[in-house]
Image: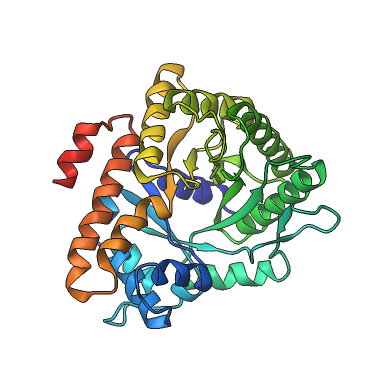
Length: 344
């Protein structure tokens, strides 16, 4: 394991002004999103859509890396260039989703544990040979009555840590993603408690599995009230509580934190990230704070494209606009004027 190389890659993934594009939806999930805009869920349509995203002119100025799905990392551009090679040519680091999904956790009704450790060592070697330089594993934590249980938190933290150790062995930077779901009517205070507990257990397990903190990236959810809560969180409160949670749980050796958007609107996710970076500068926190968004980056591009070839350039401009806005937010320099100027 080359710790220096892993550290350099992790630092490049969270370089100032850059974030990570999550485009690792499974085929069924991608199909739902395509169907919503009237596009058939065929392999060629999935390939064409992902080519649209990755060949957006100038995307590498704002996006450091992109997370691919197993199908995508094996596909090529229309001209025959493999996707990983096309990404590298554009200054975008190829990544790969390696978990096999969240499944029901035995003995814990309503809770899930992410699977995929069986055969992972061999799969990671293949992905590295295909050009991947980082990987992603997502755990999902539900807040509800008597949830999450200690068993759920420990099972997911342990799986994330074992995955991360295998990644580093294979010379891949692990993105560790303990997502606390936005679903529910819980308060921001309850979200803070659960997120802090999940992240604390995660870093304890990472330590016990001898994972080098300098060679990983944390992909957490933001701390905010559930989407059905009577009292929704003010943006400033989301930023403050999320940073407090990071300060309580994340070792200084971790190079960066790349937030997921977790069901927030495009502009909400950008605004929250911007406020966090503005507050973090005053607090002199040790990590780069950036984004690893899926829907909050892709949605406007997908709804612009709708499978029409003559809309590709317009859809790419829409993606670039969101990438620019989030790049500004990752520096604490985003504002409403910038949003509308870029849109224009």
